[in-house]
Length: 172
Image (cartoon, rainbow, N blue to C red; front, side):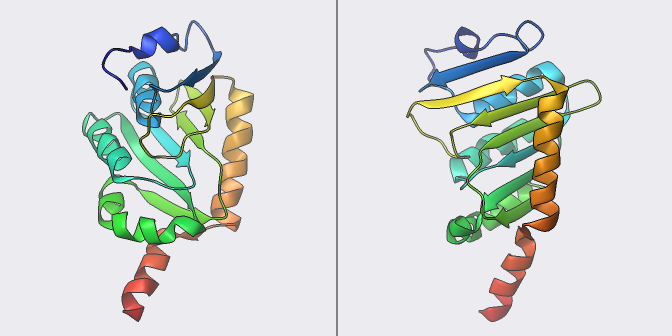
């Protein structure tokens, strides 16, 4: 996030505004995740994206060091496999499970015993300064619907990345 902007200028606390949307060129996915976790406390996180960047992984690494992330699963697109292979050593240290699927969605699901937060956004798991949009909901029905659909993708439509990585190493 740009240093001159505060996330509280764009988003209101989840308890005050259970559904909100944003269009901003200062918020990054990692900013939104950290903002949510600061309110929910430690939680399980699932994310989907077309691709991922080293800058994003670095931010996640430091968020995890704060013990705010209990588990982290990511679904990326098959077409981003080459980039994912390059980042695999860092992904393996940061992400519990990484899956590949025909995926262009950008979701952020955060849950623990008290909270279920769903974010549908336009930004990949990268860093940029372009306008990106997102909607945030604490409605359990919204969360459950997206979570169930994501679980279907993970269990029936994806490949665990470590399997792809293992085959790549074996073939070289």
